[in-house]
Length: 324
Length: 286
Image (cartoon, rainbow over all chains, first blue to last red; front, side, top):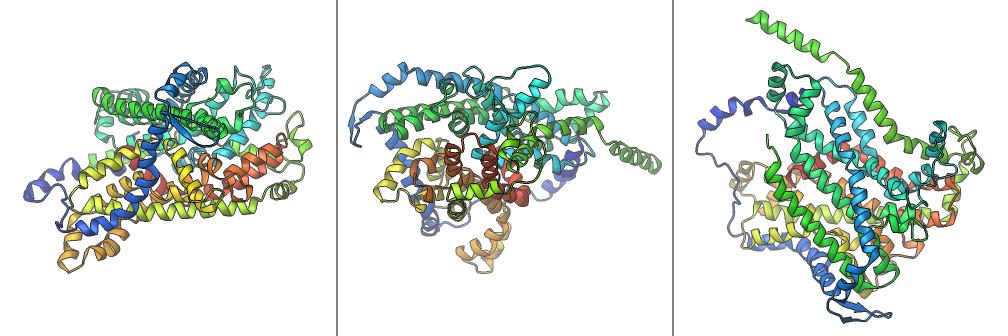
């Protein structure tokens, strides 16, 4: 497990670095911007990005917040309606479903976190061969067109001719119609979520493990810790910042799940209530039913949830994350 | 002393010998789970409809059915949609990499009033889920008369607060001494940016570029919102309409899926080193 660390940790960080730093005490530690009079140049360089973001992202954010307090007529006009949309939102069973569904999808998709930690640890074993090949194969689902992923898994989960039910029949299980059965659709979606997030988590973990000093493993080995003990007592505790990061990313991604639900389940399916998420509802209300005001309120809910999660990440990270 | 050194070195080398058979076994089982769906997609895409619904399932098609591919092209303006996706991806990628590099350089290396405040604004934009922008962006496209055009597909996606953040981090890593040396040699800001900073931050730009390529190619929600004309759709939305036409004809659906996802898979395989370092970088620092 220490092989990767050996390769990347520069030796002078621990020993030679001290003397190096002492030799040049006057050297600036942090780079400071060199020129004072670069205001005009800075403006020119910032202008395209700043103007684009102002028009397409910053102003739209405020506009969506404003729209969430309006009601939209059938022909595009909108009028101030105060908290009306939010009152509907609280009582809306679809929103309630979406939140419950998101929680279930998140909980199952989080199974990918320990799985990918194990994969990353195995790939970091000293002298491990074929790392690049494994990494490529495991990462493939992350980059693949979600629409294609959805159709492929829909075929695998097909109730009559799908590969999964055929495999299950071999061990005597009569598989359900996974995607049209309200009881199973969300599990099918979540399995695809696990499959699709292992590669991303793995890459984050691989770089996290690379940052763990080899000394820790050597010390653990001197104390007689085997590989398994090293994994649980060195790798996992020192990997908590990465574990935290991928957990929050997983929650945010589940919150925003759309493509799989749109393409694998769809509005006509009896299972849609049990699989819809906030973003799916947002699309349905805003663009299929043209109820922009209500969709905006769902968007604001999504925004608040995301901000809370991001804030929670920063807070909790400080409290129970070990930094090596 | 020298003897014991040699001894540990030799023992060390021997410790590197074991091939970790159990690790390979576990990783191979995992790889079957990860790659299996792709193999199944490939196999089905070459089967006849009859083969695809046979019990037990067909693992290898009797003879490859290339007609599934031609069916995809006749059912949809598929070539045109691939072209649309390509244009959308290139425009978004060029826009994001260019504008993010310029702004990232200014944030990383220039002293001007409001630097910190403006950067804080950029950072807060990265936390807003992009669905929040969709309604107003749709209205802007509508107002400009751009609905159902290629321009609508890529225009709002050409700017990125995240990209600016990523490029700023890359520019900050470049040692100050190099810039100071160039300044002493009489280079002005543009020359420093063009001749020194851009070449040195090329890995960062490639990493950002590959991230944007993948994100653009795979984007479904925005195209669904803004373009309903099949000839102006990207291939992601095209697959959705293919599903509408060929609900249960899985060989055709699999052929379409394979063709639509292959280009970006190739980009990934070519640039995977840059992509992974970009992800690790944004994950650790972000």
